[in-house]
Length: 199
Length: 180
Image 1 (cartoon, chains in turn cyan, green):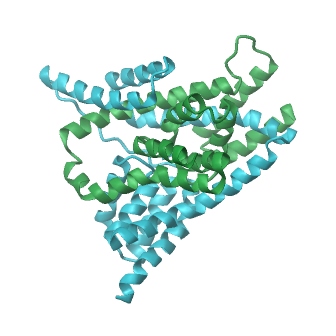
Image 2 (tube, each protein chain N blue to C red):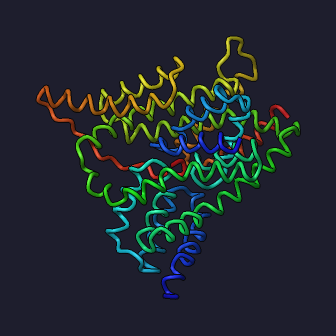
Image 3 (cartoon, each protein chain N blue to C red):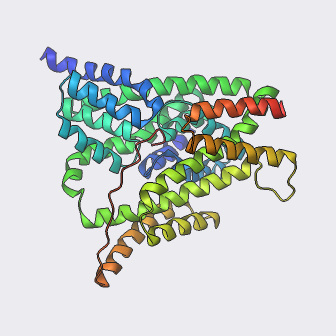
């Protein structure tokens, strides 16, 4: 009984330790989770955790956060899921608050203002970089490229982004069905998923 | 305010396919156009701060926007809201996902979703480039500097594989030297 009670706490601590690894992004976090959960604590087997990462990439939200919740749930039910989630989120939450406080205090300083003027151009580059990376794994053929272009154009016309998401899912189904009617099968390539800091 | 923050970031969490940057158009629409909480430049700064910090971009943006609008409680409720949808989905449907992962309809819709996500990120990049003063009818030396910083940053990220944190800090130093 006491063993069962302790499990959420040790899940919390295990994921708390991993929080700083998200600095290197999912790339760094996934091996860290594997090492901790599979090798050190022996909570789950290797295949189980591979499945968990696959599902966590499919559900909306960040892969790191999703897999923490899922692993916690598999090991200790709902309390485990909550404990693991808090553990993974707490360090980055705290750091983000500290950064926000700094930003609010310093933003009127002329030097900081000058720095942020340049950083705004870098943020555009950061987002462009994200687009390149996601495109590499998601744009498999002409149709998906056209769909991406259409989505960007529709956003410029002022369509709400939620519509884009809904239309994207519908267009995917429509494309696959149309090709099936034409007697062609759609090969949906399972390229390497983007496990990255951005997700 | 707290309810409004919660509702908005719950929505963001619910449709957050393909990473945090894909959610920027939605955050822009809600924070800038519908709610008018801040100026485009301020949102760009928040995204910069979010990119510097470890952790998922969408969660970091939620914390920063929440903190700015309603302090600690705002940050906590925005962060909880952005995480909640996937948390509930994982708990409720974690097992079902294994069964339906190879479902034809699901894979087909993801084929479309992943494509439009690219378009959404491209849109976010272009509109941030506009707010950064890179797209203008009357280019001056500042426009040129911003374009050069953009190109340099992208080069450092794509070809030199530099971490975003490093690139952001370097860019800030360049900014102080140029505009300070």
